[in-house]
Structure formats: C-alpha cells, structure tokens
Length: 430
Figure 1 (cartoon, rainbow, N blue to C red):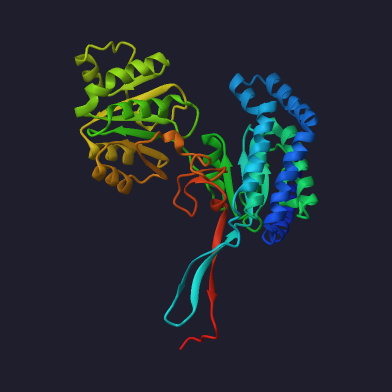
Figure 2: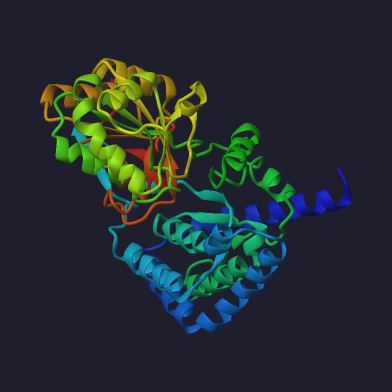
C-alpha cells in the first residue's frame, strides 16, 4: 500500500471513528434537538445562499471545463429554486413524526411478561452518491431525524458545494446541542476513499450507494458492510383483458412520459392480446406525439399492421430490450396471452423495483399483488408513484429492491431497526 493509500485509509478511519462516537449521542437526542438542528440548517442555507452559490459556481466551472453535458450540469447546479427545495425538505422532515423510541407489537405471554419492539437508529450510515449536491442535505436530514450519524462521500464534481453544506450542517448540529461529527463529508475526491468506507464494518453499519449502475455494482461487489440499493429500474405496466381503456391509456402514458430518467419510469409495456386492438391506436398516437421510440414484439407489430397503423418507425424488439433500463424516450412493447404470461415476463426480466397492472377484475388484481415479487406492486396506478414523497414518507434516501429490512422507497423508518423489549413484574422462567 502506498503512502497516499495509507493516508486516505487513515483519514477515512478517523472520520468513521468520530461518526461512531457521535452516533451514541444521536441515539439519545431528543426530538426537539433534532428538529431544531433541521430548522436551523434551513435558516443557515438561506442566510448563506450567496456563498453557497459561489461554491457551487466553482464546481460548475470545473465541470464545464471537463466537458460534461447539459444534463450533468443541470444536476450539479444549485439554483435558487434548488436551494428553496432543500430548505422546504428540511422543514418537511422536521415536521415528520420521530420514529425513535416508538414501542409497538406488545403482547402478553402466558408467563405474564409483555414482549414488544422498540424502534432504534441503525447507527452510522455511509452514503456514496454522485453529482447532485442536494443529496448532501436530503441524506443528512433523514439521518439526523432517525437518530443516526452519517458519513457522506459525494462525487468529486460537487466537492466545493458538498463541503460547504457539510459545514453548515455541523454548525446547525452544534447549535442544537448535538455532536457536529454526526454529519461528515469525506474531503478527498480519491476513489480509494470509497473502498475504505465500504470495508470498515467496525465504524459503518450500512452503506447506501446512490448513482450510476457501475458505482452500485462496485459497492455491492466489494462491500463488507450491508448495502441498501437497487441496480436497475426495469418497471412494467400490464394492461389486462379487463382493463378500463381510458385508465389504461392514461396510466401507460404517464408511467413512461412523465419523466424519462427516473428509476420508477416504465420501460416495458405488456398488453393482453384480446385488448391490444383497443389500446394500441391511441397509445401509438400518444407516444409518437412525444417522440418516444417504440420497440415492439412480432405480435404487437401484427396488431399494428392489422389495424392499418403506420409501423415504419417502430423497431423490432430484441432479447436485450426486455432487460434494459433505458432512462430515455424508448419503450419496449410486448403483447401477451394474459395475466400469467405477463407475470412470467416480469419474473424473468424485471428488476423487482415497481410493476403495475391495469384491470377492473378484483381477483386478477389480487393475484398480481400476491405473486409479483417486486418492492412496489400497483393496481390501476402509474409506476411513477414509487417514490418516498408520494408514499407519504416525507422524503427518501433511495430505493431498495432487496429483501432486507428496507424495501421500496427508504424513508425514516428504513433508516432504523428495532430491539426486542420485555416488560415483567418479577417473572422467572420455570
């Protein structure tokens, strides 16, 4: 190991050690203190808006000189609107119920003891993310409210913005009587810092990677710390034989075109064969008007031809299309025999993120809910609702399609765990 590698490892280790100590204080923090820190942080961001934008401009200048595209620059930019949104998010999280210390599922056993669960923090959460500096505040705020300490490693392109946001967060924590080390940003942009973070279970309890597929694959492969993550968002909408046509068209449109670059955007549309002729004309017209490229199976093309529709701009779907998260105005369409074939397709090609059925048949809806093994399963609703805010969680730190304690949008409760508690009155085991 080179001297530089050793220095980075030591730096990250020191940060982890401080976070572990801070997590013990955060676990005892009162709801009032945590909310005070969040509101103070919102006010500090507003007061320091000019300085924050100056730091962000330094990041933007570096990103532009490196030749990054317009979409990248947009994600990196802290506009007044983005800053206002961060402030609103902090106030919203402050208004949420504090999950820590909640006691539930109490039941009395034959021995006379009462057994239940108490909600407690996870401890130290490491979050690795890319170009969006607003994630620094979202992640810090959720971790603070859930009583955790957090170690943040943002992308090198946002180092100036992230560093300033971290300093403001630490100031807010201190003013609320909480340890400043509860939120720390790793100051180096060297990728070796990520390797150090994900291999120190003595200091970090869970890792949350937020970014591109390559980042998440690397973290999942190398981590010695549990990881909350999803790799792909290959989401499906299945239009059933018993669908309401107007609902089906509206949902299939929104699920694909409301936003293209999100993990809960529909990438494959499945249509029951008996209803294809009724929904394809309007859907093809709608997608064409929004310049969505259609990649269709042979059965779908046959329906398009029989209906007299122009299919010259449609591509023939290949095997790879069913397994692709486009994050773009591209949609794969497959015509299936019915519900079972649709569920078989989802089972084979889905990413266990979000899948929806459009149907007026209660039994089919219930079967779809029971048998589709995804983190979010929907009936007669757009997949775009798979989001922490839309689920009423207030905010989310990410999406998980794993089967650990956190699944789907990960909000405050997903950043906590529980301990068993036993209340007795002198019982002894016989």
